[in-house]
Length: 302
Ligand code: NAD
Image (cartoon, rainbow, N blue to C red; front, side, top):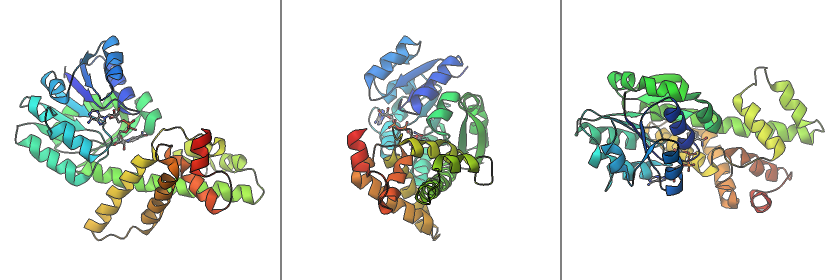
């Protein structure tokens, strides 16, 4: 059985690592917050003091970190995974990062006879807890097959998208669809209210029809309840749109709707909403229409 190392125990990493432990995989963990490491040690995992130590104990190392700089630091920096990992091991980054950085990570590990996969996920905190994430994988077929039993513990819709970086390209596409749909749901529910119709009933009426989506279901409900505790932090979604817009520039592909929603995220973040759930995008739109509270007011009262 693979010895798994897991680095980055935040909103997503914590339930993912817990599911691997429950499935019986020997697990070594590291994250910035040592209290979280201690929590896992109590549940039967081994704790490590840095990413190098995790790699020394593992045949497969998984990272679930915020952004490209953290993945570069943890994977390739001083006391990083690359210093401890043995030839023949597998490195899997499940964070959402720039595809170019993912490809550089693949190349750096290849020099040490270590295969890598970029395997970002969709499905949010609920999907992580329930082991129902969608997993989008870039890398070789052999590495994908080796990782499959691990992915099957974490997710349901597991797709080998293509070579190094392809998983991250798929995830950027995913985040465009999610962002634009959040904005669509915010506009629709706000319009309903202003037209004198109960937005909760409108959401109910739309569920199951052609406009049905998980975003209408979960984030529509969040908007109705003003429940913006993350979930998925707005600043992380803005990061994902930056990745998508950079890809658009690289491949001369205009992304007008994505660019527009990215500026609305900028407004949310500039008004104090960086750490709110991304469904708080609705607050920006509501202020445009003179409805509801601003992100600043919401953060002050939350
Ligand atoms: P988070 O901020 O809750 O967790 C990140 C974790 O990484 C934290 O525990 C932090 O302490 C740790 N960390 C940061 N830098 C570190 C370092 N240098 N060394 C060790 N640990 C470090 O973020 P999250 O919501 O869990 O998201 C993680 C990744 O998954 C991001 O790339 C995000 O875009 C992506 N993602 C998130 C969601 C979601 O719904 N939250 C869904 C899909 C994908």
